[in-house]
Length: 379
Image (cartoon, rainbow, N blue to C red; front, side, top):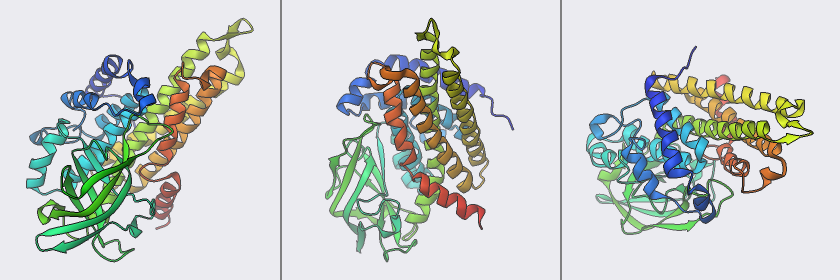
């Protein structure tokens, strides 16, 4: 099994490195401090085709596969995890849900705008009191003629305020029934649909996270994705691909933290020699590099299987679980290698450290990934 970069992947990686130097690195700490979601950066990413990586060219996308997609997320996340996270959420969740389950009219209406970042997409599954227990969601849609009336709230929604359109999964049947939920496409400005409180986060601070509020929000039946009762099943399939994107996000953060620590260890001297020459540091670097390599192989294996149309339920969960935990360990060791400077904002280690933790939580916690994996191997 071999996953050398293709010409497309090398092109994407080089393009993102140049883009990062010009458009991300100069202001990323300002965005982090102020929690500013830099919409203009995503518009520029849209011009480069990175906001519709998986969308076919007939709908205005780049028409690439998951190998190119993983490369794009990882390269962005090496620079700034916040930008990588928002790019991944836009591509995998909102855009990906419409691409996978939308009818032709819905695809033609929404995918060209999303693929070019003319519109930013959001996706709503999580609720304040449910978290991993999505089957007990309390946001309800009741049919009223040709419309569905939605009431309730979603939280931890990426782009909940700035997004132009959201795919939202709501309850249309009994609580706890996996066939009792339905997905709708809801545009910003729809009466009764609004953004709530913006979260003040530990990391990923330039990636916007807010509540979504529904108060007698009337949505036409034409905005339904698939059929009544298919929403939860759709969401689980969307998350299979989403887990690969979070694995790629984790991989990029880990690589960024490692490269920063490696460079610092070769520049920083103690006792008249670089600290990389001390076994305590060199062994840390060896462990970091080995775990990143293993995470990369799991991630690209899942991406390759996804490209070939295979079931990636177990493999995407394994990639997401391992890569996210590696990201946290590598970022933690990165701070340790930087020492006191790793605890300051003058160096990049602390930001990688703060950003990495979300990877073990978002799009399914590490514990949920273990549940998915154990169910797959115990069938």
